Length: 155
Image 1 (tube, rainbow, N blue to C red):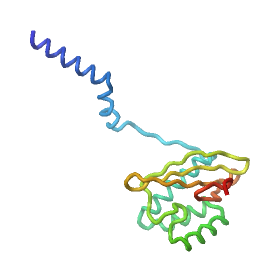
Image 2: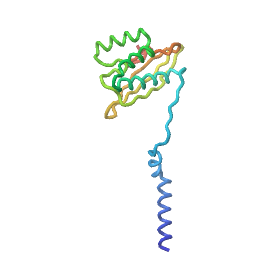
Image 3: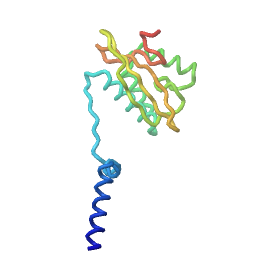
Image 4: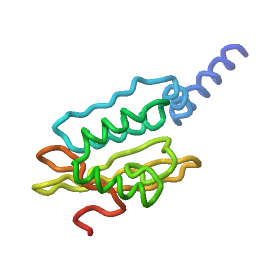
């Protein structure tokens, strides 16, 4: 009889813990499959792809050639020149607007006009600090024509 009571108490406690969500963390941290999706015709996807690949290239040893290739592929020629001038003046990476490399990034749609898409890129640094950049991309050629604290429409 004591064994039956103990079993019922254990079952009740387990059921209560699950009902309160105490078991959910263990399930979530077990490694549920993650997915990332996008499409090349979507400018937000393209900006996220650029930042992901660019940060990988900056982080990886010997990624300088890839950094240059990514800039050539994703940035307009005029903006590449503008970025190079900014970097010479500020002694920092113009794409990241920093001397360090962020630990994470997030790209959020900030509106679209007939000519361009604007996105906010949130960079996460050590100790959970964040900074934001506004990135403008042409809708036709899918090229970045501006990175800064404010978007082109805010200038």
